[in-house]
Amino acid sequence: LDVQTGTLRLGGGGSSTGGSYDIAGGATVEFSGGTHTLTNIVVGGSGTGRLLASADTVDANGTLAFNGTIAASGSGVFNFNGAASAGAFEQTGGTIGGTGSLSIAGASTWSNGGQSDAGSTSFNGPLTLSGGGVRDVITRTVDFAGTTTWSNPSNNAGSIRTGSGATLANSGTFLDQNGFNNSISNVFGGAASTFDNSGTYTKSGAGTTNITIGFNNSGSLDVQTGTLRLG
Image 1 (tube, one colour):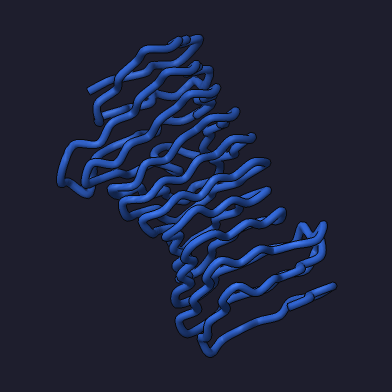
Image 2: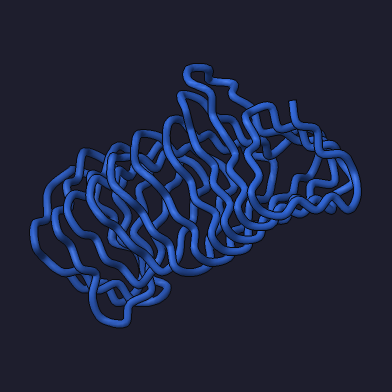
């Protein structure tokens, strides 16, 4: 499958096994309806385009290797049940799930949407958490291994909501630049969630950040302005 420019929108479900995708920079393969199953897919070439789940479900099983951007929006569900890797990440809605791992090497943005199930997402490059949308993490482990910048436009906008034993693990640099009040909470209940900081957590925004899940610190905690409330 070779998408050189524009968008190829697949809206009726289907499956791909052992095939290859080449998606050029600026081009998109959009899964917009039905259930799509991808098994042992290599997105080859030098393509840095997007694989986007915008509606219904994409199940990636086995290996998924991609130099471009994994994306979720709208009501799309992108499940990773094996070992998946990508060059970049973009989430404006939808859900990232599955029992396997998703590892992102480069720049990522997460402005809205959820991540769930027993798998893991690892952000190894710069990650931007901005805007007023909520980010939900249920059961899943999310690793912040690069530089993560978290900011919000107004009081209690852009919060992180967790539940059912979710783990937020920072081994990189986590920059809490919230200029307004914000929170990380266990709003969905279930087993207690935790924020495990083995890297550097720096609070430099003027607002109050309320972290009401367990906060385990073996790294560096630097509060420069505002209030960090651990409750």
